[in-house]
Length: 358
Image 1 (cartoon, rainbow, N blue to C red):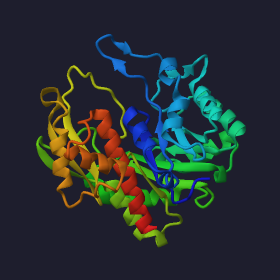
Image 2: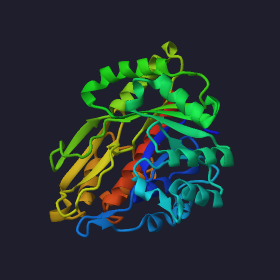
Image 3: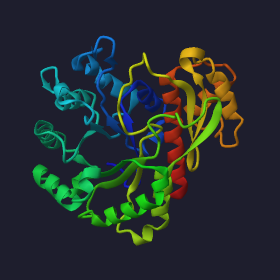
């Protein structure tokens, strides 16, 4: 079902990411499997409540899957960011509701679980494994690493499932640039600690060095952030002969793993374009959008298209948008637009990197 070499981007199910997937061609979609994190409704800080109920937030989720993805291709779904109080949707467990809506459109959704999930959630996944016969994804996180053998065997026993029906995601979350070599050695040791190493349906290593914000990049400059997760995985690839099994590559797109909302009344956002290249992200940063608006993205795009690293307008939907924005052929966009642009380019770029290696 899922190729062993498949790329796994972990994406929060927000408008920019949804739209980024919708404009990726089918031939590229066939080479990666997104892990979708369902996030809560937008929070209204002034009224101190969520803008929508969980029912309102998810009522059209089947349609959003349909607009963003292809029904013949599997994807992972994870509810880790939803608080327990949002685990009931239309009077059933939220996971059950999401999976039932996906089934109506014949989508192949593989649920994600881990050692710290509550019992009600785990039991819904048990039912889904039986009903859909699509297996399950075990997401192994930092708190599991010290006892990874016991953690994995406990999950296998609870679900009465074989490793051959399980996709294993080893999630290192956020990693610091300065710890690249240390993390590489830790990952090597962890890979050798995974039980039944050759029996899993897939094994994917996920992490990112993208920070929570771009405040380290001065305004009106072009800055860089190292893609440590890619550099580590390339080291693994180059030394694959010494590994029992080479895990597939996974990351968090152009985002930090953490999910938090900031009160827009106190938030200062600068217009920026996040652009993935060989071993880094290029950040083309402008001024505050509150003071200067999004019109500045025309000049930011123009600046990006003059760089040697720009892939060209025909490389991806995102690259065409950047090229057109530089010429003022398209609108300036907003935060969601530029998340769509950056994510679309990123996924296309990573797929090209992997195809050149594999």
